[in-house]
Image (cartoon, rainbow, N blue to C red; front, side, top):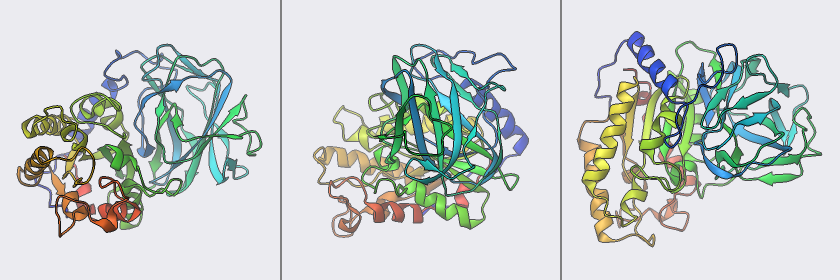
Length: 414
């Protein structure tokens, strides 16, 4: 279970000043220099409100000319003035989108009539995102409920080169040839994709002033691998449903997991250290970072020690605190039976978990190891929660993880 906050809450004025500095600095990925997105009258790289959905950006195949993308995402917090963030973080040339719409899904690729509306960028229908940059749309008037499928439709008239997106969405989205973004019908959206292209965040102005968000920074377990696709059964999804009815100051949930991701080194996506600013600290309304990552570092047999991983955690905590956010640390779960398991990796896991539980450096702790492990073999995931590969929880395990989070600890200001 999550322990009580160990840090003194700070005034909101200081927090706003600190987070503003982070937002301005976080438009570019680690491997690309920051670029000015547009003149002041044009699209903006800064968000507003509270993030209601997000997914970490990565390299994602090649861009395609005259391609439509109908992307299905699931909201966490209700609000108005919807904005979307488009990312060209890994592109090597400017990305032009000449039509962007948002609406509510009916079924499949079809939209509820009357909900699909055009988004603008600095008042313009077309936006060009420089290589390495992100842009936010203008606010779209009207209300967006919590816990609904939002559909963002994009058209790329001339895209080429490396595309930016999120590879393992665990959600079916749709493709079309040509621009059909403004259509409610699914008739032209005949192909499917399991990835989110170019879209990496959605925000709203929440109904209650002072509402904030938690951002889950993690690997494939946070990304939802082995949960049931198209049903939003990742552990952050279950957490969002709990928060939606809890009445705490936290309602937004952003899932920034990448399958195979590591804390210390790039590989499956940029490392947690490299993507922290862009994927996490730049999200609108973020109040708490939920750090659940490390199993890929320690099981990779690269010589990573507990001291190495702890140093990485400390850097994340230090940077998050400097940005005015709190950090909840989660213990690394068991993985005996996974091909890379061995006693040396297990010894590192145990030492790292002792640090997470006992160091006092996190504002709160959630003990996912205790939730997931078998009482008969603590190095192994409980069979009831095991999807079969002995590392990734099934839907029941995902729900148990979310249920173990003390919601009060997430409503944390510095």
